[in-house]
Image (cartoon, rainbow, N blue to C red; front, side):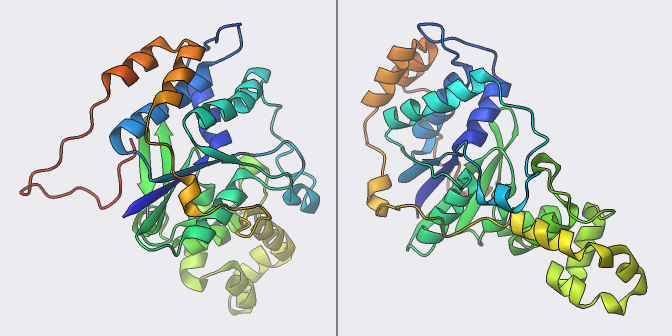
Length: 309
């Protein structure tokens, strides 16, 4: 099976920015997050180069969510200038690696990820792997066809969520993650959810009723629930709209073949030289880290998922 890697660029850059000490490029520009990105993708390319890859970026313009809810993400402090500079500069890194980038005013990177995943999910013998620093895209997980690889700590410890892993962790299917967030909210995005409903209550409600819509259609069956949830139907519906990713964003999607990265490492080497990332260049030239050795026939595979790190 071939693999299409969809990178939540802002999320991964943000993760690298906070995981690594400040570094500077020639000329004094901040480069710690760029070094982290380079290290991630060098390891990725060495261990299992994806067959197809794209990086998706947020834009600074208001999105359709801001128009629906003026307080969306309003609690977040402004991003540090050093982070903003490196988000912009990361486009050069992706291009050096042969990775096409996509962004569109009015949409978030997750909406573009959802759109590309929707476009290519029915391709034969293709698995879509979403690389991200958060779990907003878990709603997109489909069996083992679309999976999410997210960071746990730093930029090297990751977990891959297929449908079975989502269910094991949350007690809910991926399609219910929208309903789950509609009930509990999402503090990181300033989405309130339903007051008084935490993860345990939300899980129990969805295991019983299936969806937020069904919860409200059947509230009359339980007077206590009616009293607790009844006044907040509009809040739940708004939260559901805000957390639902747009799978049909208005962007041009090239044929899958055009997302294939180049076979060589020349662009990567030039980029590391330009940025004076000597240790990364040395790893590149030495072929490190080495590719994992194949398992012996007697050894039972630990997972059916591809290992990107």
